[in-house]
Image 1 (cartoon, rainbow, N blue to C red):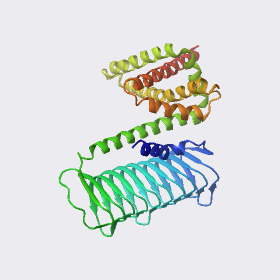
Image 2 (cartoon, one colour):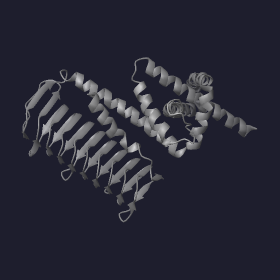
Image 3 (tube, rainbow, N blue to C red):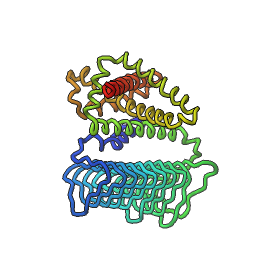
Image 4 (cartoon, one colour):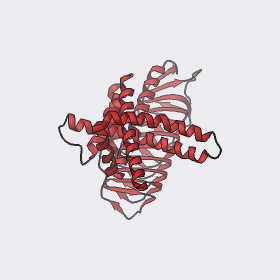
Length: 372
């Protein structure tokens, strides 16, 4: 299990290990005649890839559509995500509605609400999915591990399929290996599907340990991915301000942690007080938004802070000017440390409070400078 989990971690986190060659904010359109010579990172309302990408493609937006030939890995996070082109390596998608209609050379990892693998889709590796509904009409040349409330197969999975949840098969559905099914309630033998290997049935409760482990590691990697994504956004879009926060925190860790504790104590209290009066509702909403923003920035900044300490303690070098190494190393290390019962959350909490205290200090200094 640990080996599989580490492999999954590499698959999920690998697109963030490279430094982007092209960073695009706002709506992004890569035209059919265009060729992006390296990695492409894009964030906006609508992201469209029609040309070719020679490296990785990473995008976050409300609508993401790709019919490009992408040479390496793909990571898309959005509301509606469609992948119709050819991808030379793995595809990872977080989305509400996801459609795959391309030729994928590697694995496909999907976390979504509704997923459709279209009839012309060919996945050269395996399919890993945690979804509400998923329909596989195309071909998966590897195996599959799927957790879904509704799974429909009318295509082919050429290796073993392990499924948590209900299953519906329509001809000419095919499973080229074993079919391992963890279902709730009464189990019924599969029909309208050709299965080359064995059919292994088990109640959901019998597979609950494996399911719980799978869910645990899935949540762990999702949390690590979110923290790493926020960390890289801070590094790429606000490197100077991030350095300023770290330089404020490192020599004043405990005093800033105390200040952060007071901020997180007073901000919710102030929000509640203003919320009780009709006139103060807009101020309460503003304070609530500020509290959420402060938490997210501090949550991601905690990993970067730990990475800056590691640079100095273990590698005997300064973390400044800030590079991608402290972001990557600190976030991954903090994600692992957070797994330690009691101790891990306490360490993460202290780092978070210290960063929050520094953010608050810098913010109030800026206000004072404006009023002077």
